[in-house]
Length: 85
Image (cartoon, rainbow, N blue to C red):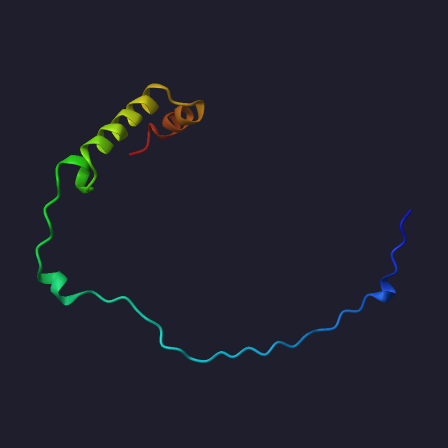
C-alpha cells in the first residue's frame, strides 16, 4: 500500500500581472467599388468553381461510386432525411 504525505505539498497562489492595453483592431469593410461593379458570370461546368474538366470528371465518377456503394451509415442518414423538406 502506498501512503501519501500531503504535508509536503504547499499551494501558494501566484499573482500574474496582465497588461490589458487597448489596441486598434482591424475590421472588415466593404469595397465601395464592389457594390457598383457587375458580378462575374458563373461558368456552367463545376457550378462556378474554376476546376479542370479532368478534375470535374473525377469528382462526378467518385460521386457515382459513392451513391452506388453507400455505407450503412449513409443509408441510415438518407432514410432519416427522407421526410424533411
